[in-house]
Length: 192
Ligand code: SF4
Image (cartoon, rainbow, N blue to C red; front, side, top):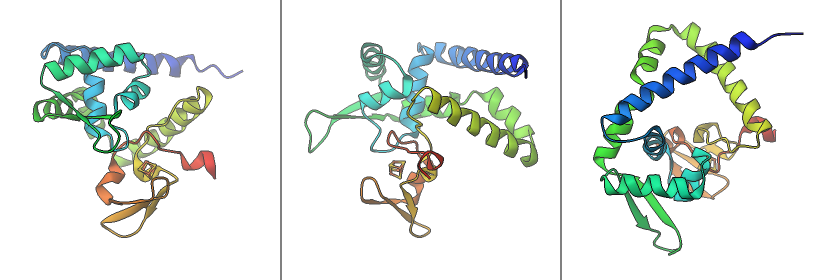
């Protein structure tokens, strides 16, 4: 029988190094890793996914933990909460310039960015495919939301160079939205 312990050990070491670097980066700003994850998420999510409930789902944390993290980030001036103009029960979160800067500077960690930059396209391309496949497999097995890039969603219909149509929400959206992550993202491979 195939033994995959070596691969599991490598992934474990990588994730530990990743977490350690994020923790160190957060300490400078008085933040825990979970706070940086919230900043990272809000820096990358689209307008359908910027609610406290979506943050909770992304983190896989409890409502209480998520709420405390958001409150701390608001207090520190990194996150702003605004009530929805149509549904008063819903709040949207956005980053201040300071919050956006912390997210952009620290996630992903510098060492990972540098290591990937040193790889050639012929090295990163198969790595990306294999990691995507592993991720999809685990998300399916654990019934987790994919939170994938919009441009890879089954509802993303390209129209032209500047816009696409979202079949789920029925909205025309600017093509830059394709690079954002979405709570409603649905993997093509699971539906086709
Ligand atoms: S196409 Fe998919 S990922 Fe993009 S906005 Fe619509 S539901 Fe979200």
